[in-house]
Image 1: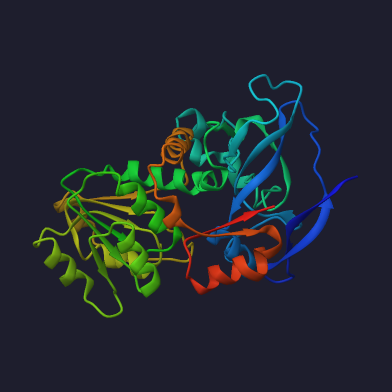
Image 2: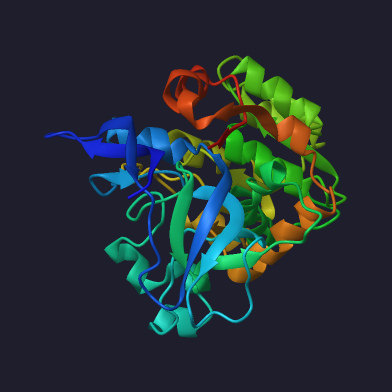
Length: 349
């Protein structure tokens, strides 16, 4: 059987594990609804680092990489609307379509997903030359689209979903806590919308400067500046109407509740299952504020993300820091991620 290079996760006895670049068998279609994809680009996500460090679960001996695009190589016998050569992007979070959440329009909360269905985490993913996925996870891409740029579609769909949850308006002051890769991608989406002010809150100088480069009007370092006072100053004592916590720890959540305006929407986007925070319910009731969660996205968010990339509406060159061969995933890609001097690193098999 033919072999391919792949980045395989191996669990440790205690927690986390390591990724090894190995020669593995090229996968084969075994079901009539499956598609063999030749991977052309796959982004490195912070989740990949968390898996290694023990901060996110993953299946032992699984090929990682969940932000991937490619071209159709082979199709199952029941597939009528795809052909070899088509450009495609994969929604790595496979949904069942029949649980109560799916049928109520909350497919991103599919009950089946909690059993572990995500490609690149619980099933083999895109850090390899080929991957087999069901037709239901695939979105066909416009022929004109650049596939390296298209590797941003999966994280971009999450940012689109967050933007929609926030219900951003033209008169809003928007604050984003955290200018990591997802915070910056969310900023890129929000910047497509005419708003009053966009404020980035970030402790890292490199990331903060990147936020300004992508269109933030103000940058606040919470390690050196009183965030509440500074936001009230730059908003003429209005406060922030939309706050997106792209970090998700106790400190950032409680920080957000110090400068939210009457009627504000606080969007919890970053995740840390260990986080706990205090809140005063009357501060929500009296000023009619909202706390909302934003988790991955819907199929329609993928469609919107595809159009943003296909129509060059997002500054891809400012979001993709480096493109590397899969062989350098660990030696270069992961090291750059750990140094926090990058937005997105894209691998190509």
